[in-house]
Image (spheres, rainbow, N blue to C red):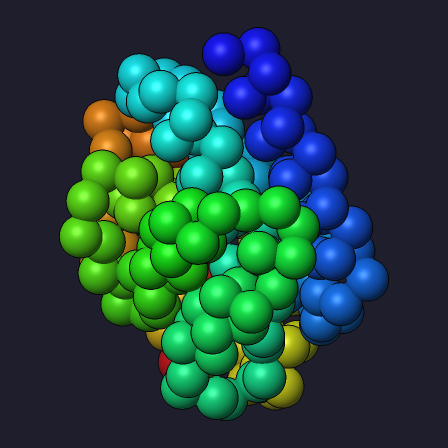
Length: 196
């Protein structure tokens, strides 16, 4: 088992190197986001009792889940999955591993649509910032990435998104649920300060 985990660390290192070199450098979708999702996935998967092998599969998906990120493109996730199918075997992943990783990526497309527990964890990791203290900072990055200028409209849309987006796993609800509610309340305060 030790050898299998060491082999996987090499694969993860190669996937991270590729991500570091080719990840888009947009205000939100960038290396920091990919690293954040990998960290949150690992934390949630551990809390959810996932096997180390499946944690490594999910970490691999988290690392590459936004490799193709063209603002406004409706098919970023599908293009990313295709890219993973071509590149991950070059990093030492088996065809079966690569296929499992690539199949996880479309679940993160908004609105998210996970088909299994591992995909639920990946989706929760991808939006963990909704229930963290850095939510407004990350939200401002998304706003800049999309080129939105109207603050009021942006905050109204963000509030609706936050209110309608739920975490799939018990661990995510426990870790991020309380702060998500605080973020909702804070957004309402911001909105109420706009002149009517």
